[in-house]
Length: 532
Image 1 (cartoon, rainbow, N blue to C red):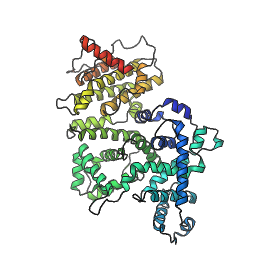
Image 2: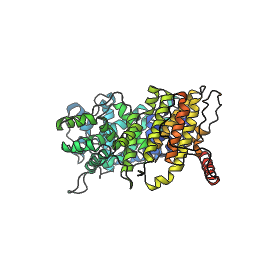
Image 3: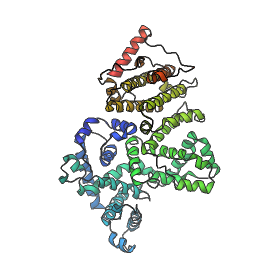
């Protein structure tokens, strides 16, 4: 495990929501070892390190008790040597099934070919099946378990590492089996439904219902043409979707890519009952290959779905950003006031929001990134200002304050980017804040004024005399409607682009600083609340 300063990490992050925000907007800024990240998200569920060791020891003690109750009787060495087993115990069948699956796991990873690893994973998987008989063991669980063990093994610590006593305790080699069980069990608390049998003879398994929902509701909402084509080809969703879901894309992507994807699934999906981000990643994956599917015959389409054609230029951040945008869109679809997703312009707007902003900044440069962000802001403003509101009444009530918050964040960001002598750190913070606003425009569940954004806005900075002479509007006091927010976006573009700015033919009229005394009082209270 590379050097990692856990104290600095805990000083930087005071809540898991901050970690989630960084992972979504600026994943390269998180230096936390993957094993600890997963443990924080699913096992510790807190950034209070005082509780970590206590919980860790408690879980290890429980597992030691399980090993005394449940014993693996199968001769693993003989099976690995001869491929046969003659154990006569009542649990022989399940142990043999687990062993056969483990023996086929990721043949290209040397760790999984080691007999000691196979024995460890067999014990963990068998004990889990005995502890949760309603779920038991189903094929596919072994791959989730193997990847869990792999991550913990990669992060083992010893006293000779001369590192944090806390980390040496959390990732001690002696307890890797215990810790694997704890982490795997935590994952399965969200994923077990994917492996449940039908509740009765007349029912279908939950995984089939989930697969059908993904295709017939989620994909239909985003791309009804693709859903219709798959239906016309008589392609049942469970044929291809079960593997995607149960293995969480282990067969579709490389091991490194898969584990990176799980970072997002576990941290961003920890609050959902069943890692629902997995479902929207699937929708994003199919939307990426829609053209190939739309021109495919039944056989061709099934082959494409069973052997997903990966894009070497696609990053995990890109894919999950697309999935998050799709999830937000679909949530609105099935709200009391649904979004009209059959309108192609809206689908295009939603799709544009899910672009990887970090990659865009590298490719286009800061100024073009700002221009792109402002363009997106204008497009979404036009969407939400549509007379036939696509937002629920509750969201409409919050819109004025939310617009004010986003406008304040954008104003601070552009002001920093206009400064010729700005530090790279401030520039990165400004870009990160713009990314955050774009996410907030696309997803109403994201808090605009989180602690990171407040700190950025309030940070003291020196002012340069070479700033653009075009004054920035007092946006934190003005963006009280979607029309005004769109007008602010135009003013931002003028302030940012200077001589390159082209006046639009139809720009909304926005008046700054001319509110009534009552409105000014309300705006002052709003500003105070934003900066408190």
